[in-house]
Image (cartoon, rainbow, N blue to C red; front, side):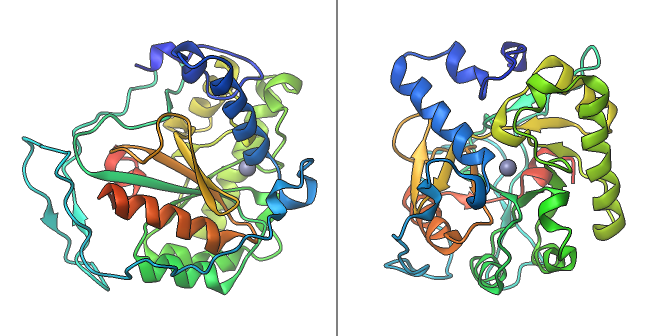
Length: 299
Ligand SMILES: [Zn+2]
């Protein structure tokens, strides 16, 4: 499938453009994704990140308890098995029915969504600008193992903050050193590689693990970037299928979460509201939050 992810310098995840049947609305949605993802609250041009809307994290949602099994996901694979390390509740694990495409021709694959019959969804959280104890508490309370795509320059003031997420079951991944949203257009191979390797080394130094996944600042990628990602020792570029933003869900396809969706959110001031929106969608869809790296076998 990743063969469709050919180079589209300066564009957001290109698969949607390639398969677009909705025309302009899809393109507009992608533009919004790129803008939102790429910006820190301080540099958001639209100011959309500063939404006053901030519903409480618990809202009308049930906390804890087993996630209902989705009847929409008949699976012939072996049943989920309990994980002995679960804390607040039994976290199920799933035998992956998806294989990460290999690096071919020196180019790392690009994944936007995981094709799976299992009722799973993947939560990814980017940047690291806003560091609140509340975010740690909420992820632990909901037992959401997440992929944290962190940027060195936004976490260097307090890298130890993210150790709590490690303890909660999340992993730190690579979102570059500088978060240059124009890196695809402005930088050649070596500069891109340097910005990735810098974060690889920083993550290893502070969190004891080399990231295996890369998220491009702003979402744009190219074949040059795919090559740099592979050469930096990572296994894939990860974009997203849906996002929690400004206290609500935005979908590139449809109006609900589907099995295998990769969801983007950020360490922003609206963290609790965004997570509440994600949680409502996740529970409504009957999906379990599973660590992407576990499912891909790249933890
Ligand atoms: Zn970012």
